[in-house]
Length: 95
Image 1 (tube, rainbow, N blue to C red):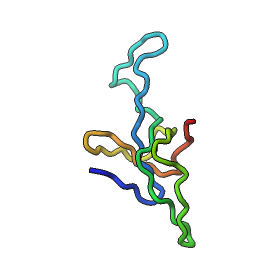
Image 2: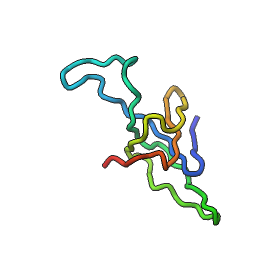
Image 3: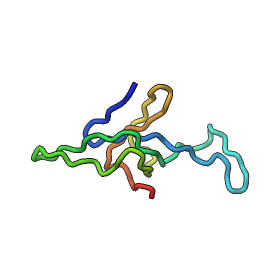
């Protein structure tokens, strides 16, 4: 199944966090927080303004982004956990 985001929504696949600290301590998956970084896998057409014009989303597939810990809605598609998020909830693009 494929998802096509609507309006200014973006679909993100979370990037895995490092599971071992710099000092070598292994963090079990149950104790690890969800990562706040991800890769854009799909982008909606943009947000429609009051005058009816579409403002395109300023992201593209493949961009690596930062987002808030509680941003968006998590969905499972074909066993993958994806995040559906509005463009305004994305904090930055990692370059």
